[in-house]
Length: 419
Image 1 (cartoon, rainbow, N blue to C red):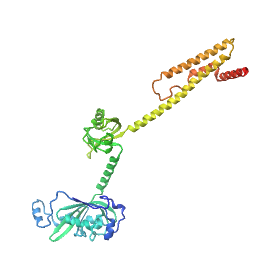
Image 2: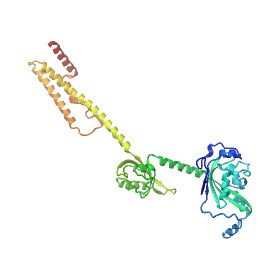
Image 3: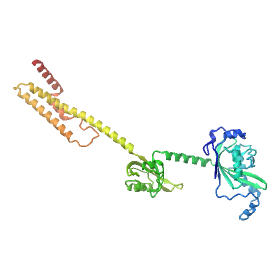
Image 4: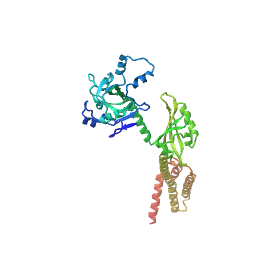
């Protein structure tokens, strides 16, 4: 059975709310109220407030009879704080630890009301406690409590109804759970991070069986359900041997990394990068591994696009180089043919030199075309070197660049004379 107060999230942290001096008036109490949680402890017998019930119950127990001094000592040091109140919550007595824990030095908890201490408590909570404790032995409260300094701390409070004759009191046994609350907050933060992570995360045992996975892993494998727990990791990969190598590395205390091909529920396959690290229990014993999967589909698509762009860039650079290499012998061949056309039949020696140059240029062009025709594989560098010796030799055989320019001038002069 649980009773929940409204107005905010359960066990909300009230430390951001300015603390009011203790005690506070009822309107101030409502302003400072925060949500609290009440649980009835399970497994308890129905509480019979009749004092006659106690001797019969104690008679069944074997043990020493506790002297008053021992009982007083236990009371003073029980829990982080133990206080006794009337049914309206006014504190009538508090042990030594309560004075040390709830108020400053020299102050006393007597005279305060539990509503001043338990953040979120009001008269309705006390009424609920009184009604519930008529039939139940304990009620457990999880709430933030406030010290007289205004400092807040999370506490677990067990409330018990004590009856001595016609007099009834409420006993509050308070336990500071700051360390537990901080641990729970860290675990909750880690849980949110894991559940919202875009990477698929799985926990497996030493047999390769999944014991936990986050929603991203279900999306990676195209699984419609919320969990793949109980599935064997080997059945999720296209290569079952990967699981054996992964578990072998984990058993040796090593991390594992590799690219795996995952089998989706619809029969398709997706490539993912998998990182695995050992998972140990609180005793340090290896109990399995934690796996992280990163979908490589987009990365592979980008890598392929980048490769295509790079291939096109290299091919364009090679086309420029091809034009450059073919330009040299074609220029020589063109100039030689123009000179031969202008020469007289009597200049046999010069005509022979020009014919040799033309033949060399034609052979160079033929060799370059054959080399390009034989290309069958992609290269990450230019297909042809930036400088081809044959092209340079052809230009040199023609007398070098100066000679070529001189021949062009002669051709121009001949054309001008003809005009």
